[in-house]
Length: 397
Image (cartoon, rainbow, N blue to C red; front, side, top):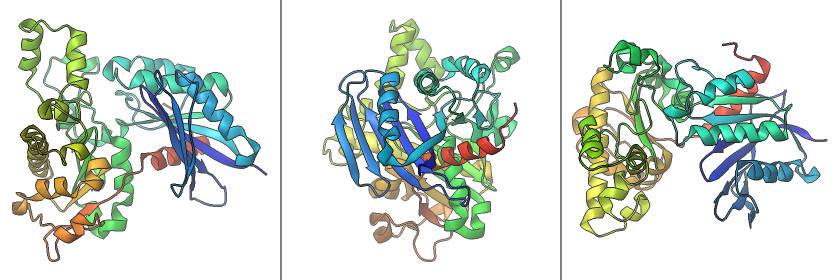
């Protein structure tokens, strides 16, 4: 007999990442059955799929050139009798929920139309998030779909963190600080007691360091401040994004360098950050093995601004009780973690070098004033939980 399952989707410009979770009414657990991605959409699509324990099940090229074809290929694989599953719902990572959507929601045509209005707020992400929803709707029109927003977790920030000092009419049209990586921070917040005990309710900074990078200040496991802002361009320097930048630089580029809006958008999203500073790569793994001074300069710049942001968020919290690293760099780059922590002894931050090199969960030195943790994030698990919850108790906006 086929068992019920939830499909979790994260659609990008050239990829469709997915995970499948088993669902039993007799258990609160959501075991991951499969996960993988269809990469290279628009060029050389490839289907890669793993069992939960990372066993590679398939790795093959596909004749898919967009999200509808990729979705059809994925559904065909999942529908085969040998999978012994029946999809009962799908959950989507949606980058932007605007001011209106502060919680996950079960989608309908009206909600989808409203989400399209938020496309200008995240033009690199929203079209692809919505394309996956629409493709699944066309191919499985009766399958319930749930949107989970990267911005929702940060609705708990105080007003002084949400405002941007522009005239009120702009604020009323949605120009404010939103924050992103919320699904990652929500997962970390949910498991903090397992690692920190009662300290989890205190003042915690989480460093989500990956291709995109941000920090979040938590108190009582709620977001109080974060480094990203109106868009995912703000805050820390990232792989190909510059992070915080004087708006006057943008005006100069438009007025005196002759850049068009499209060219400026391309520069800020795809040609800046670590790639621009290193003049070679946006990948921190490659930069750490690159002996050229430009590569080291890129790493130093990234580290410096992480330290600076930790200091700033500590001031917002009024102190610091724990520091957590997560995401690709945060979980797997002990050299970067050590460099970030190197000058933060004044906060009580002290690493155990051996534990740090081994990527252990607790990497602070014995007797250090505050714990430093490495916790693997799991945004897909958060989406699966919300999807199950929405089937039972849909949010009414």
